[in-house]
Image 1 (cartoon, rainbow over the protein chains, first blue to last red):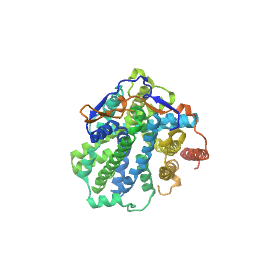
Image 2 (cartoon, each protein chain N blue to C red):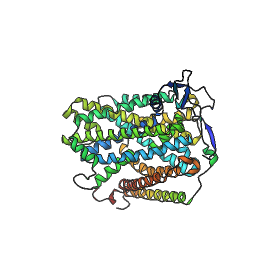
Image 3 (cartoon, rainbow over the protein chains, first blue to last red):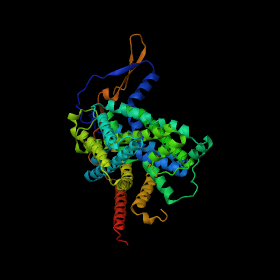
Image 4 (spheres, each protein chain N blue to C red):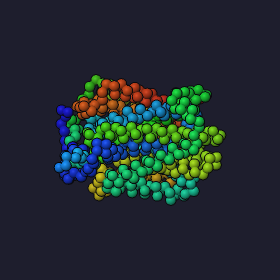
Amino acid sequence: MSNKCVMLPAAGLDARVEPVRGRSVKSKWARDLLTFLMVFGPGLIVMVADNDAGAVSTYSQAGAQYGTRLLWLVALLLPVTYFIQEMVVRLGIATGKGHAAMIYQRFGRWWGLFSLIDLELVNFLTLVTEFAAIDLALSKLGVDPRIGVPAAAVGLVLIAFTGSYRRWERTVVVLCLLDLAWFGIAYGLRPGAGELMRNALVPGVPAGGITADLMFLVIAIVGTTIAPWQLFFQQSCIADKRLRFADLKWARLDTLLGACVTVTVAGCMMIAGNASLAHGFHFSDPAQMALDLGTAAGGFFRNAILLLMINAAVLGTTAISLSSAWAYGEVRGWPHSLQLPVRKARGFYAVYLTCVAAAAGLVLIPRAPLQLIILGVQVLAGVMLPSAIIFLQLLLNDRELLGEFANKPWNNAVNWAIILVLFALSLILAAQVAAPKLFPGA
Amino acid sequence: MATMIRSMENNREERFVVVHPLDDTPETKIDVESLGPMEMTRSVRISLLSLRAYLVLMMVLVLYHVLDLAKVFG
């Protein structure tokens, strides 16, 4: 590349060179496996954390309303989510910097601040919904939320405040693997294999045709699967982990694996909703669905779904709070790395702590305006997603910045098609939320 | 760059050393600060202009919603 280059340590770390520590292996196969395991993490985490409390609600509602008829849509989103996050991987590895810093430096102060404020706001509102889900699931499990919610918040702070990126990543990967329990739930509640395969592979419209409700749900599924914070999170995570150019193919594999896990788990959530529909239950929220399925299929399903709902909210909270903290630290020029102890990155950890504590505290306030907050999330996410993806696309075409890592023509063709669809869907969603009277029958 | 270091030991057995990214020496990256702001080519200008138009439209929709809630339209 002809660009000016700089030796870049992890954000905020000293540039001192320490002796390289490595593991010695005999075969190429073992080398590749070990390299993948060392690089693996950011892709899986960003994808699984995307199946947060809001996603559990959206996918199970889709199943409870339309059975497995929308499985094809979830399958279709696998390549879409992979293509978008793969661009972030290239950007993160090539620059060693986060997404917020990149927008700020390449598009100037106005767009930088706009992206940062929008991200922080929508992230905070989303965090409130995560804690609302924890509150709801805990109360259904018979745990007092006044104890359970602060305990969850303390746990979330402790896993990030260890001063070790690896410790945080290992803890979160374990939480991600717990999400695989959705496969057990789906297996226990599965409909016929033929029906599943048909609905996953053949696009179709549910009985009743295209209605405003169906459109809203389709947009919600797309919006849940591709969220703005994911772009900021994965790029900052890659920068913090100091992934190298040679790690690119493994980081891509990590992202692809994560996309496969998140999409199949989303399908499992839809199957759980489908079981609720088959038993004739009315869907109000996933916690109530868990109780209903508990009475019909056994206590295991009730407890498993409620616990997985909490796990989803915890994963979502740590990832979203970190995306806020990294972005703020990058733009302010503060030290911002999970590798740093708290005393060396006070501002970064303070943002994380504030996000978690404020969202948890707000949920515990009696009669907090949660519906208004959910509405705010929908509108702001609608504003945020197209703008975040436009910046991503422009950055990935910035040959001065990325050189050989810039998009190829086929990347651009695919990405512009995705952007146009997302733009249209976001516009319809925002219009539906902001001006529901424009949509007769909504 | 020391992700994979191939070494030949005395007994000529091939071995590979795999280094975790966090244990590796910092890698040379693009110096973003020295590049400054992005060049405003025609496509960049059109994209940012479209984004501004989209944001203005969204603001109008939100304003409509607020006015509707305030029963300005009856």
